[in-house]
Length: 214
Ligand code: C5P
Image (cartoon, rainbow, N blue to C red; front, side, top):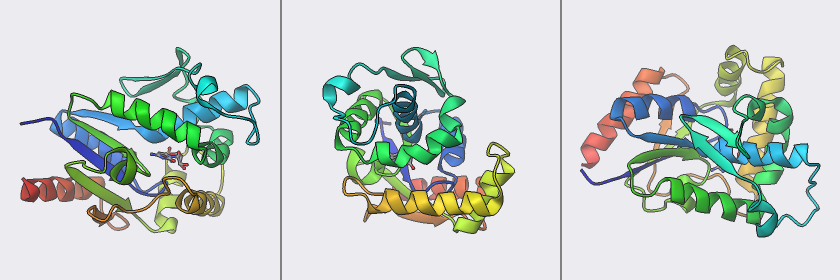
């Protein structure tokens, strides 16, 4: 079979990375979590005190090395997989990801990583901007209550369910209302609402959809 791309988009906490991980094991293909790249850049900006109103341009970005190996994220050769999940990063990632130069830099990198292989990418703009011709496109959604509960149960965030829900709604709003590459369903994406589905059920829905398309 020729190389193919699976694009999975959707709002925060909709289960994209869990599903993409499972799917990549099942299909034995690569997986790239593009949100982790935006998070790594955000961490760099925070550590280096780079603010929203600064001139964030190509030459500044090209000094920053982001690498993903075995699902671990490296920022200038340092493993930052845990730090990028920090709530300070989460609270700042939306403004960083709305900067044109940032998106150009990361989309280019994502396309390079995805070249010459079959791969699953998850994010907000994969089926609309990064790979509009992806062979398979999915848009994963779930109610804000369910998404907040899932995050809460992961025990990675030291906040109440209501606080997590408020953060999720705020981030979704910024991500879907920004000017450049807003979060939105691609016209030809297959929508799955995972609110009442298990991980296995979502994965099998995806696989049966792919089988039908082939
Ligand atoms: O997927 P995750 O929640 O880790 O993504 C963090 C943030 O990165 C999102 O809220 C969004 O602002 C940004 N992002 C993006 N485009 C992508 C992936 C993530 O703008 N393709």
